[in-house]
Image 1 (tube, one colour):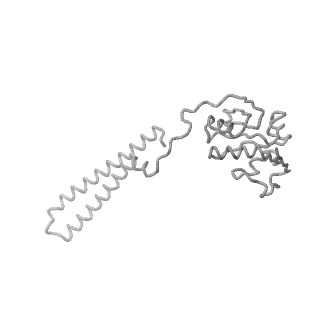
Image 2 (cartoon, rainbow, N blue to C red):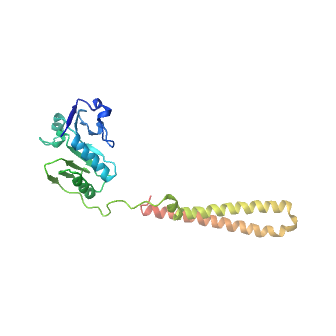
Image 3 (tube, rainbow, N blue to C red):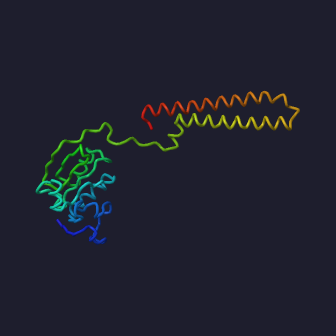
Amino acid sequence: MTTTFYDHWREVPESAWRWPNFSPAEIACRGTGKLLVNELALDKLQALRDRLDKPLIVRSAYRSPEHNRAVGGATRSKHMDGAAFDIAMANHDPVTFEAAAREVGFLGFGFYPRSGFMHVDLGPARQWGERFLVRATAFASETPPAREVLTDSRTMKGGGAAGVATLGAAGVEVAQSVLAETQSSILPLVPYLDTLRWLFIAVALGGIAVTIYARLDDWKRGRR
């Protein structure tokens, strides 16, 4: 197991860092900035990231002895060896995460559901803490393309109807004005156009009402 110590993570040469999804700052001690690069542990962390194909939010990695004492860490914590990581579960299903971590070679597991993270380390094989509750749905269902959501939206349908009807009413009004001024021979049609204009206005108001109702209903259902 190859390890390299740096007094501060800024001292790490760019050419020496080969874990593309992580940075020295993420892995360094939160209290002192010191960094112990444990290559085997970081290789497994990168393998876990690749297997899950999702970002890993590192809450804690290497801890200097003084910082480990300050935070009340175990006296022989694997964090001081650069061989332990606390990973937030905000964007992971804990069951899937644990299975993947075991597959890449992590042996020690600590469960902290109240704090929202899982501890993984290179062993020995053991586990502690209360496991996370199994989620009803491990991952969110696939989000349909925006155009499909808009097509099926009652708000869009109501707003569309209101918009079309408003344009229709405006068009009829323009046509009515033109006919009244230039086409005196068909003036008898003007009253009918007036009726048609009011019909469009009624449809527009109906569309607006549907839009308002849909938004209120969506709000009540917690869809906003």
